[in-house]
Image (tube, rainbow, N blue to C red; front, side, top):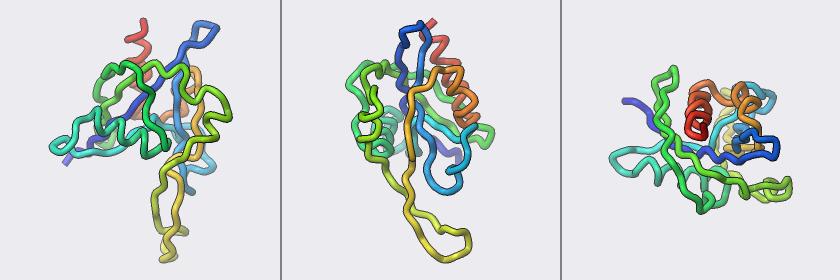
Length: 161
């Protein structure tokens, strides 16, 4: 069975005419020392027979960042396939005022997950799903995003012209 996810890609226009995306660095010990390919849009899995992609994207945004997605118009960018076969449906919206300052981003409350750590220790620990978020110009965000989400940036650029 194919795993399905949905997420929200917020963007904002910069004074220099470029566009930035809000991206989140994945939390936990496996990602702590990684940068390239270790960032993601806020997203998560859902069951399409029980929940719409939009509802899942909004729910996952709240769970991962601790706040509701901004009340703006959203467009569905498309559904993108990872090499693993996982499929992620991405919605985008102009989040120009969202978490604009360092203080705004520091106030976000990240969701947590539990895993055995260290491996094979029998000890369970909790870690944040996300350990930080940042606004990044699309060219800077592209190599940092997990590979399966990079086509969403291309779609966003196409949408914005």
